[in-house]
Image (cartoon, rainbow, N blue to C red; front, side, top):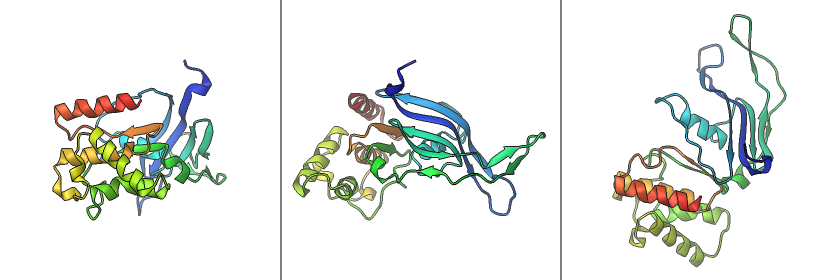
Length: 221
């Protein structure tokens, strides 16, 4: 096992429940008591059948879904911690209990360090924004470089994912599914993040482009 300071992300006893309106109890138990750690420069693959919670786990680690309970530590800093608000009785039934308020860091500073490549390129791109706006918007939020420097960065990352800069002023509906996925990948890579959650990032791509994207991710790693 690696040294403690090599661990980039550590997750302990993470749970994510989705309440169901009109039903008692915790609702859908999408993530149930997951503990993992990811070292710097390491690739961790999750394998499981459809609907088992892989996507929800990734989104919960990034706090796109607020965790129900557990601990998330990023680069030695605890960014989320909450005791379990549900306990099981002798028969295995869950009952709510009062617990202290969660310790939860503002995720804005961490967004540029932790990115996600969504599986569905159709729903993850704003149809009213051009390719340039989609990729440059995060750079503008964090005030990265000048306008000219941001444009150069966007052009460079587009080329890295196999798209020409002539596409900058086009809208998502003008692209194929594979091209849209490459735009999603480019947006996630724009900050050169330390952690990338890849939710089947190449499933919509041709085999040749799959190899290109995977080689790019490996290079960045």
